[in-house]
Image 1 (cartoon, helix red, strand yellow):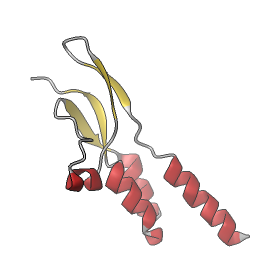
Image 2 (cartoon, helix red, strand yellow; image 1 turned 180 degrees about the horizontal axis):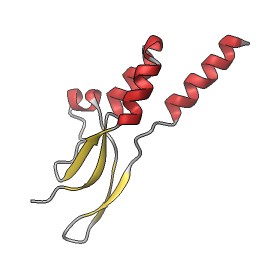
Image 3 (cartoon, helix red, strand yellow; image 1 turned 180 degrees about the vertical axis):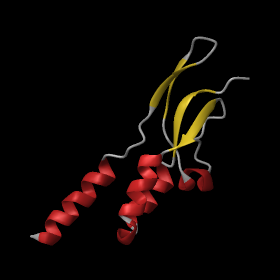
Length: 92
């Protein structure tokens, strides 16, 4: 029973990440939904990072990764896909 509860908690944390996609309005009036990205996205260059958007580190995802570091899979998912979250358009 304890293992089942731990597994359910683990799945709940993996499914509900702290970093969420954000709708960003650019100077030209266009609106775009920008997802968070992490190390895995950056390594594979799969187009998740938008060069027109300002990002910041997700402190909540980092904290969860530290808390669940013994599980190994939680930090890989959180830091691999959700380390940086979009906060707004990059002013140029």
